[in-house]
Structure formats: structure tokens, C-alpha cells
Length: 210
Image (cartoon, rainbow, N blue to C red; front, side, top):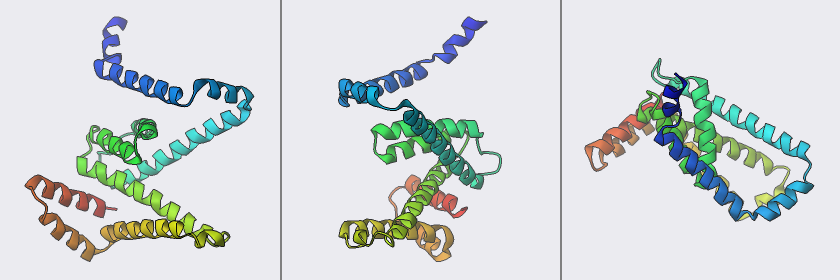
């Protein structure tokens, strides 16, 4: 009986994922100069390392729970269990280590769509999760300008905060403004291809549920 379950546990897709994870980790260690890493690790206080690892797990778990709460806007009965959400979030964190942040987001949307969640709802949940994260950073950044007036004179910091604020404003209008929603639907109608128009309209509708 045990032998019959092993092929499912070590399917080709799972073996490929394990091989990719091992290969990427080995490449990262090689690029980081393993000898120097070992020398630094030998002088490190393992209590602080354990505390950092623990905080990382707590942070990722809380972020996954935030995403889980956002998934309440999905079609009733389609929200996956928290264990599945947590697994997707941890894997997307690993993917985001080697790819731009959008790579982790794409993985999250794709993995969620494989759990009986529609593609547009998956994309909308990831988009809203990202918008909330950016909005939190913008609020903290603006608040930090009060005790740090020198930063307020840096044009690059002000430009970054300004662009991020505009992006958050546009996302908020798409969610809460009926006029913005109508404008978005009108713009989606001009997209080339029926599939693109259908996906854009579905994404806008899924975002509006928030």
C-alpha cells in the first residue's frame, strides 16, 4: 500500500519543483561567496538568527492571513482553506527572492486559480493585497517625513511617494467610484480582442466587490 502512494508523492511536476528550488538555492549560495557566508555565520549569534527566522515566519503568516481575509470577496464557497493559502504565500515568497516582485504575484494568482477560483477573482485578490501593502508603505513614508525633515527635501523620495500615492488613488477610485468604474468599462471596450475585453471587464467587476 505504501508503494502505491509514493508515485503521487514524487510526481514529475513535484520533482521538477524540488529540482528548481535546489538549483536556485545553490546558485544563490554560490553567488553569495559560500566561504564568506560561513565565516560570517561562524561569528554570528545564533539566538539573533533564530529570532530573525521566527519573525520572518510570523510576518509571512500574518501577510497570508491578510490575503485570506481579502478572499472573503470571492464567490461564496470558493475560498480555499488557510493551509492552502499559507503554502501559496510561502512559495511565492521564495519565487519573489529570485524574480521581480511581480513574479511572486503572478505565481499567487496562478496558484489560486488552480484551487477552483476564477482567474479574474484570483488576479483581483492579489491586486488588492498589493495595493493595500503599497498604501501602508505610503502612509508610513508620509508620516516619517515629520520626524525626518531632511528626507522631505530629497526630490527622489518625494517623487516616489507621489507616484505611489497616485497609484493608490487610482486603485481606490476603481473600487469606490461609480464614475471611475464606468470609465474603466468604457476603456475596456476599446481593447483589441474579445478575450482581452472580457478579461478586463471581469477583473474590474471582481475589484469592485471590495
